[in-house]
Image (cartoon, rainbow, N blue to C red; front, top):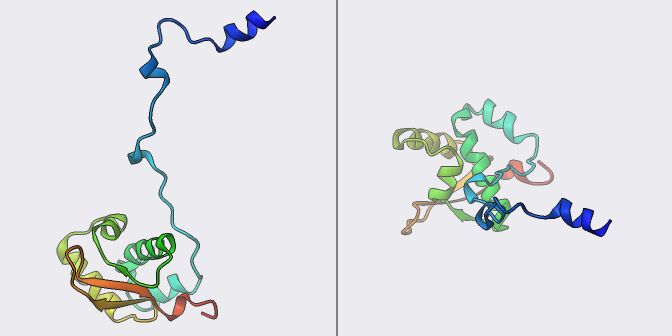
Length: 127
C-alpha cells in the first residue's frame, strides 16, 4: 500500500525539474483597490472630475499600502491609474485641484515627482 501512495505522488521521468519548480511572475500579481468611503465616488461625479477617478483610486491604494499621510505622485501611481498621456494628466490634475475635499495636492518637486498627494476631508471617518 505504501508503494501505491508513493507512486501517486512520484514525478514521471519525462518531466524535468524546471517544469515542476516554477517561480511566480510578478506580472501576474493580483492588484486591488482597498475599501473606500461611499461619499468619495459620488463627490467625484458631482464635482465633474470623473476623469480623475482612476488616479484617486490609485492614490488611495498607495496611501493605504504605505500608511503615510502624504505620498509623492510618482510614476507608480500614474501606472496604477492607467498611465494616461501627458495632456490627459494635465486635465486630471486640473480637475483634482478644484476638488480639495477629494485629494489634497501640493507642489513638491523631487527627482521622481512634482506633487505630493493626501486624502481630502471626504476620506475621514465622519465624512
